[in-house]
Image (tube, rainbow, N blue to C red):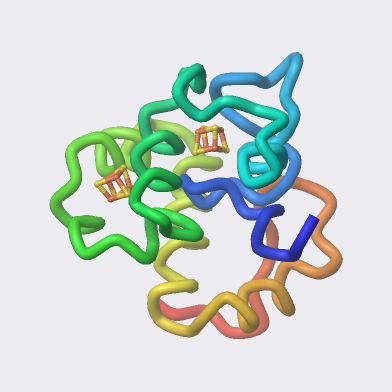
Amino acid sequence: MNDTEKIGCCGAYRKTCREFEKTCKGCKPGYLDGSRDLSRAKCRMKKCCLTKGHITCADCEKYDRCEIMQFFLNHPGYKYSKYKQALEFIRAHDYSAFMKAAENWKNAYGKYPEQDN
Ligand code: SF4
Ligand code: SF4
């Protein structure tokens, strides 16, 4: 798995996934080598994001106005605000800065070396 495969399209890091919390294979692994079929994925964000060839939705020019994405990120709940923070951190910096920040996270989100408010 390359490093950015650990980041879900929605900004969730490695461990969690809204759609497959119990049986999750991770957001991305398996699509490039053909062991999973993207057309059967249930998550609209993932389908859209990977079909467009993005690493995450942070790469998308429609990010700010995408209803699917903004609906997801604006769910009530702390974790959604952290997924949003992840995508916005990637947009403000880059994937290598994000991977460095996330290196020791045990969960789907965590602390950043610097906080952009
Ligand atoms: S984009 Fe969808 S499949 Fe991927 S981690 Fe987020 S909720 Fe799960
Ligand atoms: S259109 Fe929305 S769901 Fe699709 S890649 Fe862009 S931000 Fe993600």
